[in-house]
Length: 243
Image (cartoon, rainbow, N blue to C red; front, side, top):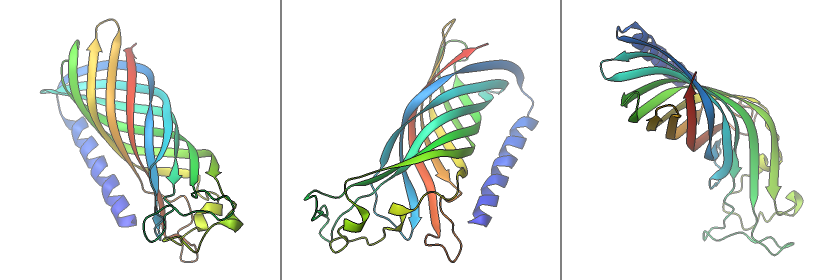
C-alpha cells in the first residue's frame, strides 16, 4: 500500500507540474460559492464485512481560480471545505442470503455507523467548452484530506444479544470499536458539466469518487483489521460566482 500511495502522489505531482509549465492564454478569475450533494460510502475492511451503501449528506464552501487557457483546455485550481457524512451499513444475511432475525426483537438485524468529517479536496480542474456563456465539460482530480468530528451508531439489537449462529459473515469486531485514526487522506476524481449564465454565475453538476489511502483503525500485525479505508461516490451541485 505504501508503494502504491507514493506512486499515485508522484504521478499527480508530475501531471500538475507539467500543466503549470505550459504556456497558454493567461486567466485570473477567482470564484467562490457553495456546494451540496449526497454521498454513498462504505469501508474497505480486511477481513471483509458484508455491506450495502451508507447514505449521507455532504456540503460546504467551494473556491476556484482559473489561471490559464491552453489551446481549448481551461485550467483551474479548485478546492472545497465540506462537511460530509460517511460510514458503513452492514448487510447482515444468513447462508441463504436472507435477513438474520434477532430472537429478542423478532426483527431483521440492522447496523449502521455514521462518520462525520470535515473534508478538504484540492483539485486540478480541466474544462472544455464555452467560457463566458453556455456549457462546459470538466474533469478534476487531486488529493483529499479529512478530519473526523464525531461518529454515531444506529442498530436495532444489543451487541450481547446479536444472532451470531445464523450470520454468514462472522466478523463483528467493528460494531463496538470507535474510530482510532481521525485524520483521513486519499485521492478523489470526478467529472461533470458546468453551465455559465452571464451576471448570475456558474452551475456545476458532478459525479465524484473518493478512495481513502489511510485506515480508520490500526493496521499493525496485532490489530484486528489490516485494512479499513473510506470509499465514497458523491453526486453534487455547486454554485460559483466570480469576484
